[in-house]
Length: 135
Image (cartoon, rainbow, N blue to C red; front, side, top):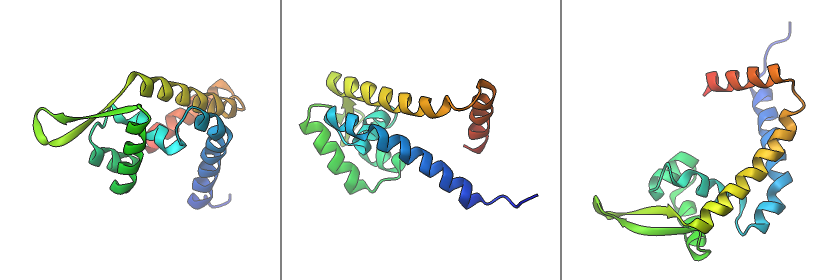
């Protein structure tokens, strides 16, 4: 029995994710956002504060600031003062931002679904359970 190499498993997972992202990047860019901006949009409702977004997405705060400014300029995000803490800004998806987010996530889901389609239904369920266990 060969020894399990965690780095090899991580590398395979990373290559899979990057392959999916690379496959759909041109279509995501056609929506008017970069791939990382799509991830910002997708996380925004659950994490509406810039510092929270940065921590959740493991991105530097200045990077998130740049993405948020671009998304605001494109009309995908609005910024407002938090009524509970006037020192903080709360971010909100605009209807246009929600539309782009949904379209982009559909593209990613479809491309990943193609990869999942290589597995049987039982294998897909086992993968889901293993990933949940590791999370």
